[in-house]
Structures are given as structure tokens and as C-alpha cells.
Amino acid sequence: FLLPQMLVDAPGGHDVRVTQELLRHHIRHARVEKIRGEQVPELVGRDHDLSDIQIVTDRCLGSTEEACRAFFKAQYGEDFPYETYAAECGNHFRRMIGEGRLLLKTGAAELLAFLKSAGAGIALATSTDAASAFAILEKLGVLHYFDVRMTGDKVEHSKPDPEIFLKAAAELGVEPCEAMVVEDSHNGVRAGRAGGFYTVMVPDILSPTPEMEEKADLIIGDLALLRTACR
Image 1 (cartoon, one colour):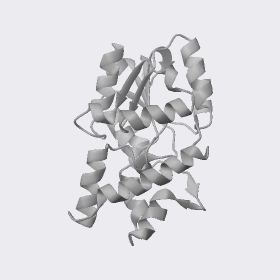
Image 2 (cartoon, rainbow, N blue to C red):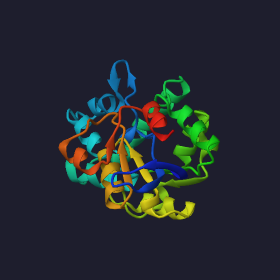
Image 3 (cartoon, rainbow, N blue to C red):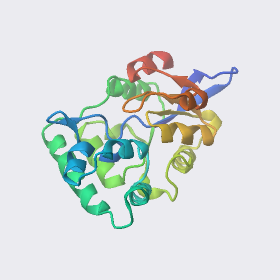
Image 4 (cartoon, rainbow, N blue to C red):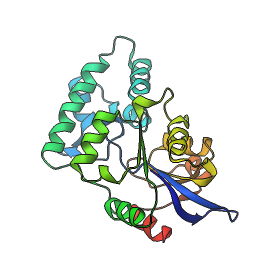
């Protein structure tokens, strides 16, 4: 999201405005949701005899479909049936949505409502394709908050390249130094830092590493705490 009118204090005394991705909407960068106690990549990976699938999937978090396809084929060989694997993951994921098992992160709805009431412009910046992302956000009742919607099928380069954040900021009419990226993936944090944004990490599937501690301007526990910090 880009929140160009929500001012916060940045290190060094700079005033900044805000960019964030709060949700991941596909299996390669989905929130930790489980079916019968297993994460979806593990469930599908077992059918393909891929014992390390969760490790591989975690490395793709925040990446576009094309980037994930290239990474999987580099890992497992050019003959790896990525389309079949992705389709099976998608089927499990859609079932989760139908069963009401896909939830907003703690504090997400309240943060969006707070920022909107404060007059902030909000942009979605997600590596997921538009059709999938919009359907999920509509189902969760938050799509209407976004003034700009930048998705993975609108960019040429995947995170950690900052292209998606730069394009979202441009559509809102702000410079990177006027925005804050709030991310939960390592690739997203790398992209925010590379683009010159004030970058906040809200850890989810992946824990902060020494690299993330160096690249993120702030690491915070959840979105409810972020709302408090924005007041």
C-alpha cells in the first residue's frame, strides 16, 4: 500500500509517507494456512515426491509467477511440471477460501480503515496476478480501500527488484523518500530498500535474519502495532 498522506518519523528526522503489502495471495507467498496440519506446498509436494518443497517455496516468497517458475525449474530441472504443481496448489488454496480459512492478518482491517479515515492514499503492491489478488481481497472485504492496485502481471521484474513499488508510488504521485514499504517477505524488504523507501518488516512465514535487520528500517510484531505507530 502507498499511504502518501500518513506522516511518520523516519530515522534521521525525515518526514515520510507510506507503501505496504500486507497480504500474500498465492501459494508461493501465502500466509501460513494449513490443511490437515500441513502447509499447502508440503501437501502438494508430497504427491510429487519433493521433500524440500517448503524450503524452495519460502525462497520464492514475494516473487511473481514467472520468477517462481524459473526458480523451480532451476531447482528441479527444466522438465519439472510447474504448471501442474501450481494448478494443484491453486485448487487447494481456492478450497481454503471457500471454507473461510483465509484470514486477514491481525490488525489489517483496522489499519486500513484508520489510514483511509486519515485521508491517506493507499496502493496495493502485490506480486500476485490481478485476477487472483482482487478476488481474494474482495472476498475479505478490503479491496475498496485501495486507490492504486499494482500487481505482478503489470511489472517486468520481480522482487527483490523495486519496480512494483516504484510504479505504485508513481501512480500515487509520490517519491520513494515520501513512502514506507511494509513487507513480510525477505524479497519484499530487499525491494523496498533497493527502491529507496523507508522499509518496515512485519514478519510472518519468514523470521527476520541479520540481513533483514540491516535492510529494514523497522521490524515490528504486527499490523496493530503499526497502526499505533502511525498515530
